[in-house]
Length: 234
Image (cartoon, rainbow, N blue to C red; front, side, top):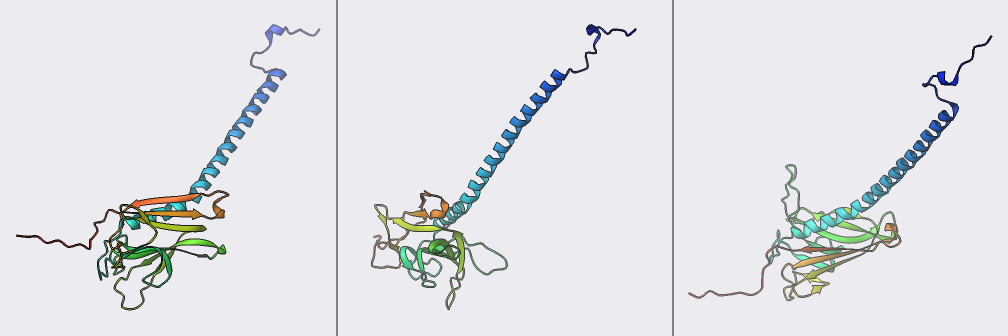
């Protein structure tokens, strides 16, 4: 005789087949949602990382321009250390290369292994890109540390930004923005430092379908000199 087991005496710790299927389905659903959240987060991280990496060279270039202009040395007639301030379409006074901006600034790094002081001559210019060919231009910063050279001074070219379609430099005299500024012109009206300098960069097609124009406005706080003289009566 086979004993009967009543349904009420079933072990409560044992899962039925339906309960097991429901548990597996719920676990699979949780894994699918977690997988989507994880890969969405990874894609977002990669997008943000790419945006930061692409914007880093531009920010470094703008920061270099800002620091150099803020440290501009007040020009002085026949001054070797003070130099001159020149902006616009011109040629470098150091090596006759085409530049858009050239002046002396106090951003030079002091090192025990080098005899140079803090004042250096910097220039900014667009040159044909080595990688992109003649159709593409790159922004370069030229640095001359030896301001007392008796021969042709050595200029260190530093690549700041690739694929720049256009570089415009304007100087503010307190009334209007001028496309040309040259303190070496003793007969002109631009013998002092400008009140402010405005830089406009037009990026090339490698930055995207519509990269837009970047504008940097830097006030110049250095004290300027004047051409006028005054007498003090006693």
